[in-house]
Length: 161
Image 1: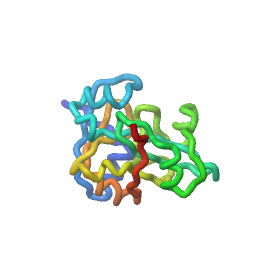
Image 2: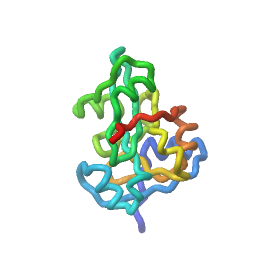
Image 3: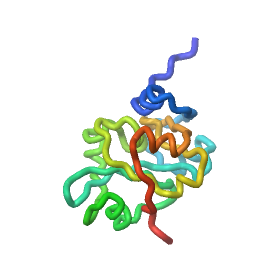
């Protein structure tokens, strides 16, 4: 008999909101970066997004969702949430703050729903790939559906090369 897949908070939220998604599981025991995750799942790199958790000058926490091959523009990210500046939180603080581990951090289902900004490139796709809430799980879904569920906004927040 097949073992039942344990649902993550991210999946429960999508189910509760009746959002269409595809769950993609891949073999992985430890943190790997987004590029390797995309290669493991066959997801197009340009449609694969990572979740970054940052703290603003006001000490408020924010979530930024950007393409895996890109870097966040800290000034643009700060502007998008009306902060003077933002900085990455320490990896050691991630689990206590979000309930997720590095490499399995999803913008869906954190302990608390933080203000979230998704890079505007996501608006170019019918489907994007995000973390499913644990290492070894990705979710493919429509970015507009994601925005509805987490009440996020879109902004240009990646560094220009």
